[in-house]
Length: 286
Image 1 (spheres, rainbow, N blue to C red):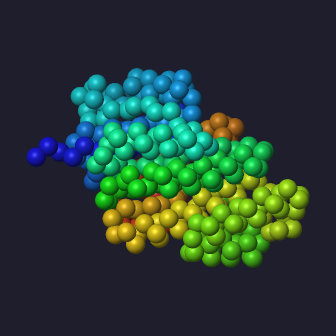
Image 2 (image 1 turned 135 degrees about the vertical axis):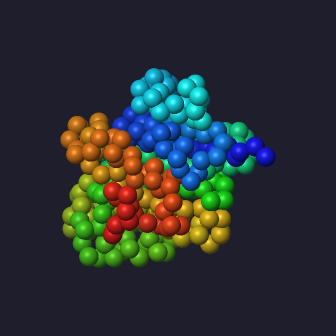
Image 3 (image 1 turned 135 degrees about the horizontal axis):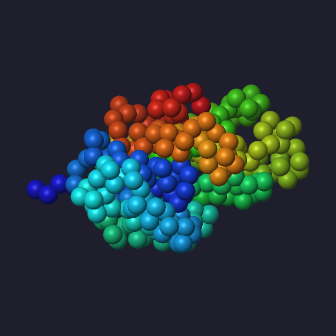
């Protein structure tokens, strides 16, 4: 019998941590428990041009060449670009339809890394919370039994910056359902529009709140998915403080170091854990 071919998709992957995640998936696949037949990775990004450029960068990447992991160097992995903008419903649906058609047997790994940091509260929430939620909802059913979904969240979404009331509301919502989490995002939105987020118990950074929401809905969706008994593991993680455009060059970790936790959650044995929040390759308190 032919070895099972494997398929992964990584969103927001044309630079920074996303690009490093694709590189590390290719490097680590040969020695991972997922290793089987050929491995296809979809590198997605909003811009056709930047996405194609990213694939070229990886095809000429010295580390990948030396490790002989790409098909053109005699390895298992092929990297393909697909245009995806998670802030657009139609774009998510097009990608989902394409994957269903191309891979009727399903995918093995989905890593939601796409995200933005802007001063504009509505846009930040629209992409980081609502966009990632929609991508998670649409792509999760495409995972085959035993598949992995990883949402790249952030330490900025940790709950120690909130009033006790909002902190408890987040913890409660993460054990309830997605509408309960969304209601907290809406509450933040209206507090911001009145200039009263501090009084309402929120930090003022929309990025942080959007990431707390992402971690919360990931926990809810992991709980719902566990009831389907498909062995699909759904986790959120923080890559750490990584030097990227998003941190404007600040940061203690390289993108490749930041990619380690998401890639571990995607490829390696994590003892069947789901619904966790991980950093530095271990589960931590949210």
